[in-house]
Length: 297
Image 1 (cartoon, rainbow, N blue to C red):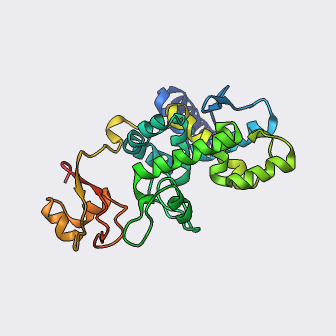
Image 2 (cartoon, one colour):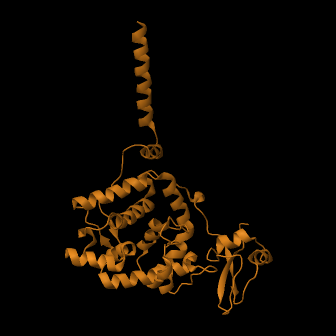
Image 3 (cartoon, rainbow, N blue to C red):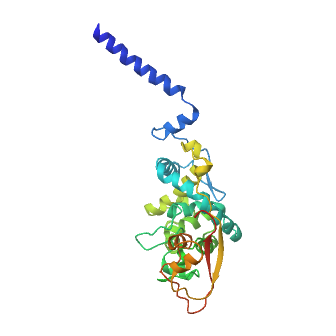
């Protein structure tokens, strides 16, 4: 009898748990999806208006892989969503100005998670430029000033690269792939394999995954609730109001300069990460524009 009672008690507990799960609200179920295997999969996706052929088996599976990976990188993906509220308003109008599709902001997402990242190969900033490429695109790169960390200027440089790549390859998808694989490297693969569609090319693992990572982050960030993400508006990182100060001379002590502006050295560097030294040496009288926050500190 004791055994029967124990078994009955255990069964009752399982029944209660079962009923509890099905009584959960829609939001709770979405949260549970984070730890489970349930996964939404869109019927159609595109990059910059160019449709992704999900009817091709390997294409569908490659997209599914990146969707699953990024939907389950919960803390990383949530942080990206929070940063995007601050970074996208800077990137979006520059893309529009240059005629580059808005989807390329998600390329910046996968390059750096919207931080001033530094790669093992020496690429830096939100758009991950190597030193020589940055200089070719008109950015100043030295021990005192590194404009790869200047979001506006780096975005403009990325636009110039992508426009040139689109002219060369004919599609925005291949232009995006070339941002990872290089124009010469991608051109060699196209010539060798005698196809000119990204989804038909056999590429290195990194470049093969590259556009799919962009597509996955775009899909998740545009439809977060479908993938179990609930980030309220008040959780997003806000843009901090700033004023601009133009400088055409050297600044011998950035800490003293910051204090004169009513902030401190740390805040000056946060808002002007392209300043790489404790001073700004400017013998050529070049004009620099510094961002000085007016609120939040």
